[in-house]
Length: 312
Image (cartoon, rainbow, N blue to C red):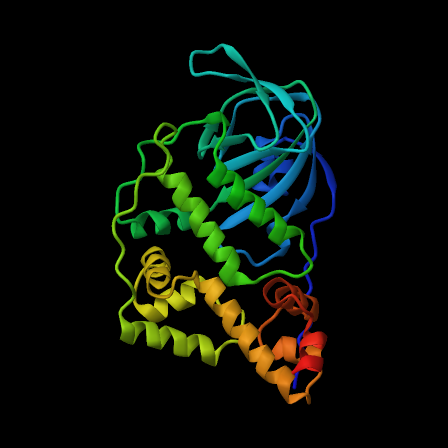
């Protein structure tokens, strides 16, 4: 049995200024006022459609810049005081507490004066990725997105927080998990109108039984692989958005939750046989590492794999 070693390296800390030359290091540096450190970045991960970075910026100014991707930002760590220039040409002050969301659509971004240090999580949504999500929506997106600072939105906060946790962990949950979070974030962004929030979803039909069976067979046959949302949706013949909703309507679970449950069940079967090592079982069942499998066992069964094997 082959054991594959999966590692996740975080981007090294860099001290940069937000100039056009420096922006080549990361497209998100176009958003940065003054001197900015890139604390961590998903550039080193194989995430599809999004780029997530944590920036720490010192007080300073940023002249109006043009960005090529839609960006959702969340202030963390401590309150930050800044001013931004409105379309009418005057500056407006804003105090951003941890959890405050700022939306910057692609195109011209306003002048900003940062008066206190600030730590932000930026998530850039790829243009092709956004276009694909738009095509999958079963209702029209909210009308023209504009620069929006000072938002309090629990959905953005929750999804961004989960993406940060996945970036920070040495036990990544895999492509299917990140794909689902990225899709949820893009959908929230496209349907957000700032007043009524996300529009209500239309009634969703369950995935037809024969198609559900086909998807389940694909999952079972590739349980040890790093399954992606795109691959499972392609197997169903539906778009990613429709597949996500219809799969959940049919099973009561997200694809990631369903796959994790199957991996846990297969690991239990292997542990009962008491032949293979725990690390080999973790790899064979699709967990990113032995510690990842141990975490799932503790969360769902309140015991470690070793404890389960002793009691089996």
